[in-house]
Image (tube, rainbow, N blue to C red; front, side, top):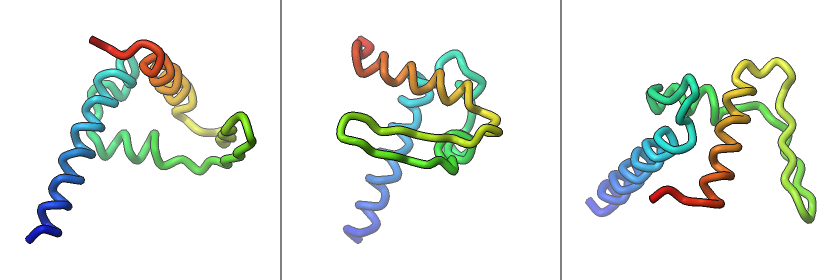
Length: 87
C-alpha cells in the first residue's frame, strides 16, 4: 500500500510541476494550453548532444528540430524565472 501511495505522490508532484511549467515558462508560446503529454513529447524528448565542461552545459540540437524557437523562449523564460520568481 505504501508503494502505491508513493507513486501517487510522484504523479501528483509531476502534474503540479508541469502545470507550473506551463503557466510560467510556456506563457506566450503555442504550448501554453497544451496537454502534459504533448509538452513531454515535443519539448522534453529531444535527441540532443549534451557536453558538460567545468563552467557550462552545452546542448546541441539537430538543425531540423521543429520547435527550436519555442524551446529557446521556454529556456529564456525559465532563466528569467530563476532571477526574479513570481509573486
